[in-house]
Length: 66
Image 1 (cartoon, rainbow, N blue to C red):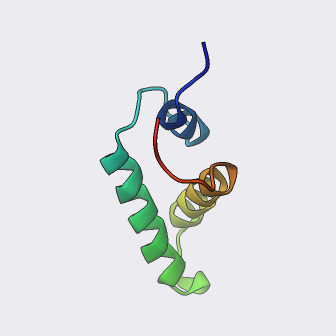
Image 2 (spheres, rainbow, N blue to C red):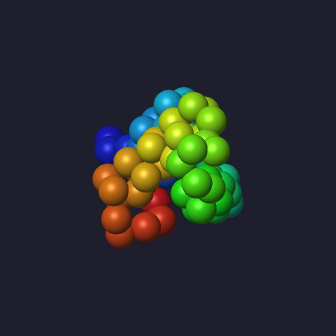
């Protein structure tokens, strides 16, 4: 049985529990906010989250749906 799109995204972000569409949307919004923050003002955690979310988006360019 293949994994759902949501489950694959969650695993790509290093989490094992299934994600909801709302949780994923919140992560994307947070990544957008981090991206708007000048690079010199980003913490290591911010940069890491931004990289993780953007890599999931690149892996699943079609968007949501399970």
